[in-house]
Length: 178
Image: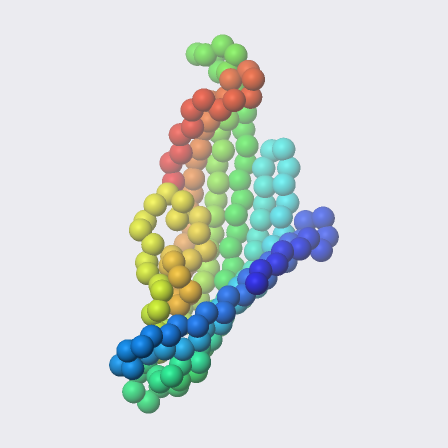
């Protein structure tokens, strides 16, 4: 159950809720239920020359398990993590001298992510894994796929992109370095 709303011109509210039941016929395996919520608020400013988008989120994972993962641990472990990020960039444009009728843009981008570390060793690992590192992952707010972990981070990503656009507005070539 997800939802998104604009409360003002630039204020976005995002609500993400996921409820999952994990069951198995093998009594030796841990089974249970997981509720994961991701709530966030972002200020999204966009102009012809750039953008500025800070966002604050609260991520939560809670379980009801048939038995604890670790001896003596709770069978209802939960974790709540505050996450903050800032995504900002500029657009510079010029006509090319080498190729007549083409426009080249230069688009620097800065992405900052801060997500506090919380010990999650008492959580099961039903469907989560580390993502394979890729260019797109530089701008994600979590390094995991699945819902059993919330990644910690304190990182800055810098990117420089430059597309070549013809006089019809069609992008012919794009290069990025991040």
